Length: 222
Length: 222
DNA sequence: AATTATTTTTAGACTTATCTAAATTTATTT
DNA sequence: AAATAAATTTAGATAAGTCTAAAAATAATT
Ligand SMILES: [Mn+2]
Ligand SMILES: [Mn+2]
Ligand SMILES: [Mn+2]
Ligand SMILES: [Mn+2]
Figure (cartoon, each protein chain N blue to C red):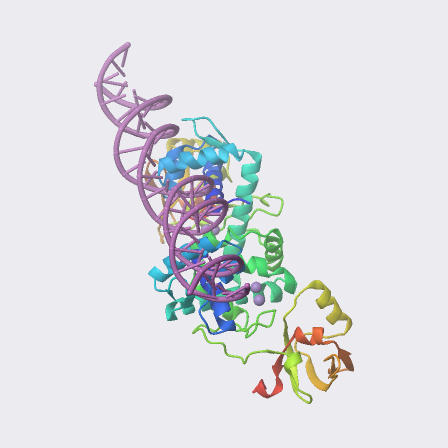
């Protein structure tokens, strides 16, 4: 169908486009793909000829419907495989991305669907990113950063923005784990540190930490 | 490490070399890979320069130790993934080869080992082919009696249960010898006699005879 | 508005892997 | 042993994807 290179471009353009709904410029793509701008231009022309994106020279690119749907399929595979690696093979959160970068290009529709079913139709990957369903829709609500919650709000820890080892160890010491319930008790104005209440204790976390905790709002639960 | 193309060549050369312990010739490789002889020559030079095989122009190739060990790793991955697809995702045994052809090129040592462990360290893939262990050793070739083979199955005559003179003479008259390829064409319900096809002819053998022929199963696929 | 800086595209080259067609070597027949 | 056939290699071409260096277009400053 599509080459790995094509799929990587589409995926990166998709994620860049999601941040702000504007045409994505060449240099950004190059940077994300660790390649050169001239290479990006070449590929852009190719993808444009295949009608996977629209392209005005010098004006950046935007994915077409088809392009977006391909990108979503790659993203779905990436995240399902990450879930598989962590949940079934017991890899750590921070070890799976590289491998998923390869697995996301395996071509077989039935494989993806059977894998999805085998894993129990998961909604989020190990980093808290939503997994598109077969039709390309994200079922669950978006996860928000804990630092964007307000006093009194409650939610469930569903993912991490930072999956580094230091951070994982920090959470370990605080006895925090995915699916923990968290309530924002207080926010300190001076340094934006947050007093949170988990199932077992109440303690302060820094803004730095709050920023990296991804929460599913309690109200979204149903 | 090595490109997919390189890995595919090494794998095919390995399996061809296993059949008879002679240098593998260009046309055979080309046929197995559905490519042209000239392409094979090009790749052979490349692999030879990398010391993955030894090559005398016009005289065929033989894998070096390194080349063989790479081929074994690819084969191990191929068969482990096939096992995964059948055992965990409930694919049928004839649906998995294409997908395993892709999965066998995923690079990650820890992935292979964790997968192996997750699957329960299986010894044979869904087609009965042995899965090399981490060190590249097969646990042992499983020989089965010809009378346990099914219609359409193929294999190689590797041993005899009965080594009496009468039996050997019988085989001699039928021009059957170790390492002969044998295919089960038909099985007569009435007396369980078996119509087999050797490299040269097709003829019936009794159940008595079938019972005493030890076969190494051979699937078309890897 | 003119100049400078940044971004993007073009031109030309390189690598990998493939092909066709022709040349060469090896094997098989006569 | 010569002629013919088959297998293998070489020569030259192509496509995908990348790169560097230079040119062109756009954006930001003076
Ligand atoms: Mn990832
Ligand atoms: Mn992820
Ligand atoms: Mn196979
Ligand atoms: Mn197999």
